[in-house]
Image (cartoon, rainbow, N blue to C red; front, side):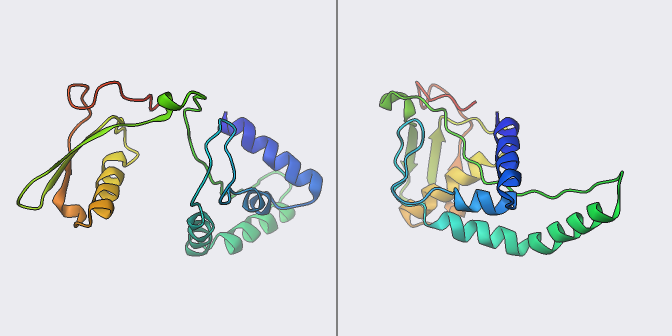
Amino acid sequence: GIFFMESIIDRVARSLGMDGVKLRELNMYRNGDKAHFGQTFEDVSHLQACWDHVKASSDFTRRHEAALEFNRANRWRKRALGMMPTKFGISFTTKFLNQGGALVHIYTDGTVLVSHGGVEMGQGLHTKMAQVCAAKLGVEASKVSVLETSTDKVPNTSPTA
């Protein structure tokens, strides 16, 4: 699905005579926008700052221009560099299906143990859960441990695809 949609965005950008990255920037979520399945975005002001940071720290603009220059000079060999924002939602339209669950144990020594319903498969989910938990509880992330997902700890978890 993502490849299909990104191909459409690139085609629209070309038809408008616009760079695809610029079109993606213009279409980023803003506070108050709604997703196609009804979720209202209340605080997404950090998205543009995150995008700008990634773009600058990767030297994207210079590298992208270098690829375009290479392509103009070479008929058969081409180079490309892309950048795309993405979010993934399961897109259920029924509210109770769009929820997640977690079990959080807070111990007297200041450590925290978290169980959640997500599946860690190399995307850093456990790290993200520890960071979110630490930020919300006001503790160091090193104080938070995350258990492997188990339905005996957090039953009826939402799909994670």
